Length: 109
Image: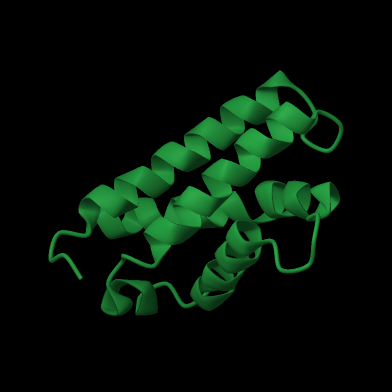
């Protein structure tokens, strides 16, 4: 693993920012282009979380790091067929703010 994890942290924040802009354009559960864009950014940010040092992640135990990694595998490999857009929307609405706060805190430390 690269010693400098900060570019990955910034990449996570960039993906979250893009997802927020995607949301501003419409409903990801009804627009397949917006849905695809949101899923792609979730994949990318999930991959980037795997590059963060375990010690840094341990400082933020309220973030479900292993679930984020697992979600990435589901998104990328599409194990179960089509991924429910409502599930993706729920992740976007309920999980990204806390992740943003944790990653920003990592960068500030």
